[in-house]
Amino acid sequence: MTVFTAYDNNQIIDYLKSQVPDGKVTTDTKTLKVASFSPNLTDADSSVALAFVAAKSNADIQGVLATARKFHLPIVTQNQFTSTVIGADGLDGAIILSTKKMNQILEISKADSLAVVQPGVINGDLDAAARKQGMFYAPDPGSKNISGIGANVATNAGGMSTVKYGATKDNILGLKVILADGRELTLGGRTLKQAFGYDLTQLFVGSERTLGIITEVTVKLLPIPLGKPLAGIAFFKDMTALAKAVAAIRISGVYPSMLEALDNQTVLALDRYEKTNYAQQSGAMLIFKIDSSSQEAMQVLRKLLTEYQAQNVQLTDDPSKQAQLLQLRRDMLPAVFAGQNHIMEDMALPLSQLAPMMDYIQEVAQKLDLKIFTAGHAGDGNVHPTIVWPQEIKEVPANVNQALRLMFHKTLELGGTISGEHAVGMLKNQWNNEELGNDVDYVQHQIKALLDPMNILNPKRKID
Image (cartoon, rainbow, N blue to C red):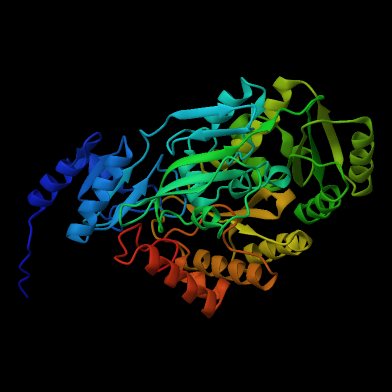
């Protein structure tokens, strides 16, 4: 059947360029392919966008939106392109809107304990700038040094410090958001308390750019704690024993800022990657940190570690040695991924159900003859099982898919969520009904239809 189009691509691109006063519109094949394909998709599965726009202003964003509305085009918003759930890959005929160059720290106010930033500011850069003034930005996802604050907000990113300081949502005071129709909303503000109106700020946190485009973020800053930080490692018989110890430490009053778990296979991978020999110690490693230690806290911590049969406990208040221990956790992913195909998952459990989930993951691995590396933010119940298979096998094996289904169903059965901090993207949107139920799933679509009636903002992500 012949389709007669109203506009050709050149006309659309010309109009787009006329609507972008400050940024740059790029349409060459090489740029579009790099911007459209993440490592999560093969060339055969990927789609190539129509244009890539590097926005530098709100006017650029509003111009892209006007173009998308006129020609009924999807917009895929990108920041630093670090999504692990196909949340920012291109779609055929889409405009990729990048906010990477909107990367200014607009204000750091020690007096008000906040910072105002554009979406392209790197998480680690904001934290470093705040520390120069005696403050810090608490959320620290594994992508801290490469991910933008706007993307952290869009996905409600978590990280290693969530156990004490919460996820991104707990550290956001206000947002500026441009809606699909071009209106800019100012949400929240500079106050630590805010009870006026509906909490629309939190509606956009974690919305994965499906409801609006974030142009400015006001974040909470905290004072750097007094006293000496303390970090350490301890080893346990297995991940189940470790999870039980973590549950006790979590409610002890010690208030650790990090409780990270790595199973024996992950520690072995780290040994190969780092040229260390930690795996000789025991079955599972706990990496922990206390931002401000005291004698009483140390006594409680040592008592609990002894009670739960921790072995080879090492503690240090030396900043360089602490940095080395924390880097172990950050190097976990490249160590596990090296030379293998992989899928890393992201479930979060009620704290009381973390140990049963650890047992179940091992049951699945044995039952389906799979290698599953398990690590995660044990202090907040967030577990990251990573399934690997040989690089020469291009298609995802059937037993890998079966393992994912089993783990997801078990997580929901235990009262957990199948997306703790990595968002939904295109990988998990078909699970919305399963996790949320019919009524909540329907309300989500109603909200989307209200704010984006033409479905131009990041379609096929979050909900489908």
